[in-house]
Length: 229
Image (cartoon, rainbow, N blue to C red; front, side):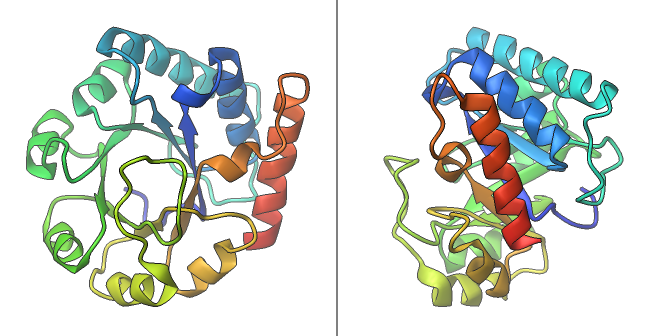
Protein backbone atom coordinates (compact mmCIF):
# COMPACT_ATOMS: atom_id res chain seq x y z
CA UNK A 1 0.00 0.00 0.00
CA UNK A 2 1.32 3.48 -0.77
CA UNK A 3 2.17 5.58 2.30
CA UNK A 4 -1.03 7.56 1.83
CA UNK A 5 -4.55 6.96 0.61
CA UNK A 6 -5.76 9.35 -2.07
CA UNK A 7 -8.22 11.70 -0.41
CA UNK A 8 -11.06 10.65 -2.73
CA UNK A 9 -11.78 6.91 -2.97
CA UNK A 10 -14.40 6.37 -5.71
CA UNK A 11 -16.49 3.19 -5.49
CA UNK A 12 -18.00 2.40 -8.87
CA UNK A 13 -21.13 0.30 -8.49
CA UNK A 14 -21.59 -1.81 -11.59
CA UNK A 15 -25.04 -2.91 -10.44
CA UNK A 16 -26.41 0.61 -10.90
CA UNK A 17 -25.17 1.50 -14.38
CA UNK A 18 -24.46 0.23 -17.85
CA UNK A 19 -21.04 -1.14 -18.75
CA UNK A 20 -20.26 1.82 -21.07
CA UNK A 21 -21.06 4.28 -18.27
CA UNK A 22 -18.94 2.29 -15.83
CA UNK A 23 -15.94 2.33 -18.15
CA UNK A 24 -16.44 6.05 -18.75
CA UNK A 25 -16.30 6.56 -14.98
CA UNK A 26 -13.01 4.67 -14.84
CA UNK A 27 -11.50 6.83 -17.57
CA UNK A 28 -12.65 10.06 -15.93
CA UNK A 29 -11.40 8.91 -12.51
CA UNK A 30 -7.96 8.39 -14.01
CA UNK A 31 -8.05 11.74 -15.80
CA UNK A 32 -9.01 13.55 -12.60
CA UNK A 33 -6.17 11.98 -10.64
CA UNK A 34 -8.04 9.56 -8.40
CA UNK A 35 -5.25 7.28 -7.21
CA UNK A 36 -7.60 4.44 -6.25
CA UNK A 37 -10.83 3.08 -7.72
CA UNK A 38 -12.91 0.26 -6.29
CA UNK A 39 -15.17 -1.85 -8.50
CA UNK A 40 -18.29 -3.18 -6.78
CA UNK A 41 -20.45 -5.73 -8.61
CA UNK A 42 -22.39 -7.62 -5.97
CA UNK A 43 -25.09 -8.87 -8.36
CA UNK A 44 -22.71 -10.14 -11.03
CA UNK A 45 -21.91 -13.81 -11.47
CA UNK A 46 -18.24 -14.84 -11.15
CA UNK A 47 -18.01 -15.09 -14.94
CA UNK A 48 -19.56 -11.66 -15.41
CA UNK A 49 -17.30 -10.20 -12.72
CA UNK A 50 -14.14 -11.53 -14.39
CA UNK A 51 -15.21 -10.02 -17.71
CA UNK A 52 -16.18 -6.71 -16.13
CA UNK A 53 -12.97 -6.48 -14.10
CA UNK A 54 -10.90 -7.15 -17.20
CA UNK A 55 -12.73 -4.37 -19.05
CA UNK A 56 -12.16 -1.95 -16.15
CA UNK A 57 -8.46 -2.80 -16.06
CA UNK A 58 -8.15 -2.22 -19.80
CA UNK A 59 -10.01 1.11 -19.57
CA UNK A 60 -7.73 2.32 -16.77
CA UNK A 61 -4.57 1.33 -18.64
CA UNK A 62 -5.82 2.99 -21.82
CA UNK A 63 -6.59 6.21 -19.95
CA UNK A 64 -3.13 6.24 -18.41
CA UNK A 65 -1.53 5.59 -21.80
CA UNK A 66 -3.51 8.50 -23.22
CA UNK A 67 -1.90 10.78 -20.67
CA UNK A 68 -5.09 11.17 -18.68
CA UNK A 69 -3.45 11.06 -15.28
CA UNK A 70 -3.41 14.37 -13.44
CA UNK A 71 -0.92 15.58 -10.86
CA UNK A 72 -3.70 17.01 -8.68
CA UNK A 73 -3.18 14.04 -6.40
CA UNK A 74 0.22 12.52 -5.72
CA UNK A 75 0.52 9.60 -8.16
CA UNK A 76 0.83 6.08 -6.85
CA UNK A 77 3.61 3.93 -8.35
CA UNK A 78 1.16 2.34 -10.78
CA UNK A 79 -0.70 5.66 -11.17
CA UNK A 80 -4.03 4.10 -10.22
CA UNK A 81 -4.76 1.23 -7.86
CA UNK A 82 -7.69 -0.95 -8.92
CA UNK A 83 -9.50 -2.62 -6.02
CA UNK A 84 -12.17 -5.29 -6.45
CA UNK A 85 -14.87 -5.64 -3.82
CA UNK A 86 -15.40 -9.00 -2.06
CA UNK A 87 -13.52 -11.43 -4.34
CA UNK A 88 -9.73 -11.76 -3.97
CA UNK A 89 -9.70 -14.74 -6.34
CA UNK A 90 -11.25 -12.71 -9.15
CA UNK A 91 -9.03 -9.74 -8.31
CA UNK A 92 -6.06 -12.05 -8.91
CA UNK A 93 -7.48 -13.39 -12.17
CA UNK A 94 -8.25 -9.90 -13.44
CA UNK A 95 -4.84 -8.51 -12.55
CA UNK A 96 -6.25 -5.97 -10.08
CA UNK A 97 -3.98 -4.37 -7.53
CA UNK A 98 -5.99 -5.59 -4.58
CA UNK A 99 -9.31 -6.43 -2.96
CA UNK A 100 -11.60 -5.01 -0.30
CA UNK A 101 -13.41 -7.49 1.94
CA UNK A 102 -16.21 -7.15 4.45
CA UNK A 103 -16.85 -8.81 7.77
CA UNK A 104 -18.82 -11.62 6.12
CA UNK A 105 -16.36 -12.23 3.29
CA UNK A 106 -13.16 -14.24 3.24
CA UNK A 107 -10.93 -13.28 6.16
CA UNK A 108 -7.91 -11.03 5.68
CA UNK A 109 -5.70 -14.04 6.48
CA UNK A 110 -7.39 -16.07 3.76
CA UNK A 111 -7.39 -13.19 1.29
CA UNK A 112 -3.68 -12.62 1.87
CA UNK A 113 -2.96 -16.21 0.85
CA UNK A 114 -4.55 -15.42 -2.51
CA UNK A 115 -3.16 -11.90 -2.82
CA UNK A 116 0.33 -11.77 -1.27
CA UNK A 117 2.08 -8.44 -0.99
CA UNK A 118 2.45 -6.07 -2.73
CA UNK A 119 -1.24 -6.62 -3.46
CA UNK A 120 -3.49 -4.31 -1.41
CA UNK A 121 -6.13 -5.53 1.04
CA UNK A 122 -8.77 -3.37 2.66
CA UNK A 123 -11.22 -4.38 5.39
CA UNK A 124 -14.62 -2.95 6.30
CA UNK A 125 -15.19 -2.30 10.01
CA UNK A 126 -18.22 -0.99 11.85
CA UNK A 127 -17.52 -1.02 15.59
CA UNK A 128 -14.74 -0.97 18.16
CA UNK A 129 -14.13 -4.71 18.23
CA UNK A 130 -13.83 -4.88 14.44
CA UNK A 131 -11.51 -1.88 14.27
CA UNK A 132 -9.23 -3.35 16.93
CA UNK A 133 -9.16 -6.72 15.18
CA UNK A 134 -8.55 -5.03 11.83
CA UNK A 135 -5.68 -3.05 13.28
CA UNK A 136 -3.98 -6.30 14.27
CA UNK A 137 -4.69 -7.96 10.92
CA UNK A 138 -2.67 -7.96 7.72
CA UNK A 139 -5.03 -5.45 6.09
CA UNK A 140 -3.32 -2.47 4.48
CA UNK A 141 -6.15 -0.09 5.33
CA UNK A 142 -9.46 -0.09 7.16
CA UNK A 143 -12.79 1.32 6.04
CA UNK A 144 -14.86 2.60 8.97
CA UNK A 145 -18.56 3.30 8.63
CA UNK A 146 -21.26 3.99 7.89
CA UNK A 147 -20.50 7.50 9.08
CA UNK A 148 -23.89 8.75 7.89
CA UNK A 149 -27.06 7.05 6.68
CA UNK A 150 -26.58 5.48 3.27
CA UNK A 151 -28.82 4.13 0.55
CA UNK A 152 -25.96 2.38 -1.25
CA UNK A 153 -26.07 -0.74 0.92
CA UNK A 154 -29.31 -2.43 1.95
CA UNK A 155 -27.77 -4.28 4.92
CA UNK A 156 -25.67 -1.40 6.23
CA UNK A 157 -24.53 -1.46 9.86
CA UNK A 158 -25.85 1.13 12.33
CA UNK A 159 -24.84 4.71 11.59
CA UNK A 160 -21.81 5.86 13.60
CA UNK A 161 -21.95 9.63 13.36
CA UNK A 162 -18.91 11.90 13.31
CA UNK A 163 -18.04 11.68 17.00
CA UNK A 164 -18.00 7.89 17.08
CA UNK A 165 -16.12 7.74 13.79
CA UNK A 166 -13.45 10.03 15.24
CA UNK A 167 -13.18 7.84 18.34
CA UNK A 168 -12.83 4.63 16.32
CA UNK A 169 -10.29 6.20 13.98
CA UNK A 170 -7.96 6.77 16.92
CA UNK A 171 -7.91 3.02 17.65
CA UNK A 172 -5.83 2.16 14.58
CA UNK A 173 -2.57 3.36 13.09
CA UNK A 174 -3.56 2.04 9.67
CA UNK A 175 -4.83 4.38 6.94
CA UNK A 176 -8.60 4.82 7.24
CA UNK A 177 -11.21 5.26 4.54
CA UNK A 178 -14.47 6.72 5.81
CA UNK A 179 -17.56 5.32 4.13
CA UNK A 180 -21.30 5.65 4.27
CA UNK A 181 -23.44 8.60 3.22
CA UNK A 182 -20.48 10.81 2.39
CA UNK A 183 -21.09 13.66 -0.04
CA UNK A 184 -19.23 16.71 -1.25
CA UNK A 185 -21.10 18.74 1.38
CA UNK A 186 -19.99 16.68 4.40
CA UNK A 187 -16.67 15.20 3.23
CA UNK A 188 -14.53 17.92 4.78
CA UNK A 189 -16.09 17.27 8.19
CA UNK A 190 -15.19 13.59 7.87
CA UNK A 191 -11.60 14.35 6.88
CA UNK A 192 -11.33 16.77 9.80
CA UNK A 193 -12.55 13.94 12.06
CA UNK A 194 -9.48 11.91 11.13
CA UNK A 195 -10.20 10.12 7.87
CA UNK A 196 -7.30 9.75 5.45
CA UNK A 197 -9.71 9.23 2.58
CA UNK A 198 -13.44 9.44 1.88
CA UNK A 199 -15.27 6.81 -0.14
CA UNK A 200 -18.10 8.04 -2.31
CA UNK A 201 -20.65 6.19 -4.39
CA UNK A 202 -23.95 7.97 -5.12
CA UNK A 203 -22.65 11.53 -5.02
CA UNK A 204 -20.24 10.69 -7.84
CA UNK A 205 -23.08 10.49 -10.33
CA UNK A 206 -25.42 13.11 -8.90
CA UNK A 207 -27.37 14.64 -11.77
CA UNK A 208 -26.07 12.15 -14.32
CA UNK A 209 -28.42 11.09 -17.10
CA UNK A 210 -28.01 8.85 -20.11
CA UNK A 211 -27.42 11.95 -22.24
CA UNK A 212 -24.87 13.80 -20.06
CA UNK A 213 -23.31 10.96 -18.08
CA UNK A 214 -19.61 11.36 -18.80
CA UNK A 215 -19.62 15.16 -18.73
CA UNK A 216 -21.65 15.35 -15.51
CA UNK A 217 -19.60 12.65 -13.80
CA UNK A 218 -16.38 14.52 -14.61
CA UNK A 219 -17.90 17.78 -13.34
CA UNK A 220 -18.91 16.01 -10.12
CA UNK A 221 -15.47 14.53 -9.50
CA UNK A 222 -13.72 17.84 -10.14
CA UNK A 223 -16.17 19.67 -7.88
CA UNK A 224 -15.65 17.13 -5.10
CA UNK A 225 -11.87 17.36 -5.39
CA UNK A 226 -11.98 21.15 -5.39
CA UNK A 227 -13.90 21.09 -2.12
CA UNK A 228 -11.73 18.60 -0.26
CA UNK A 229 -8.17 19.09 -1.51
